[in-house]
Length: 82
Image (cartoon, rainbow, N blue to C red; front, side, top):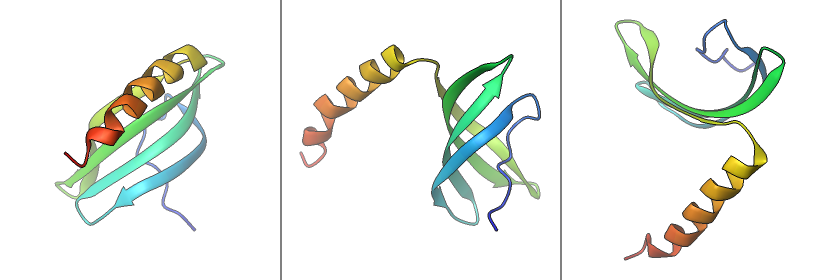
């Protein structure tokens, strides 16, 4: 049983994939819905003061946005190794 993502109750969580989780950090990709519209959000939380607090959120609202992000990442990934 996986732990419930610490996202706002404003969003309906459809599905998610945890990318990384430690005692202090949690990264996940979530398919969320609000006002009948779905989007994919990339979250990063930090565990502080006894609870998970959101540090970063990046949201993709449509396929065009995803294609732009994917193209940019694909362009930069080969340069990771220096």
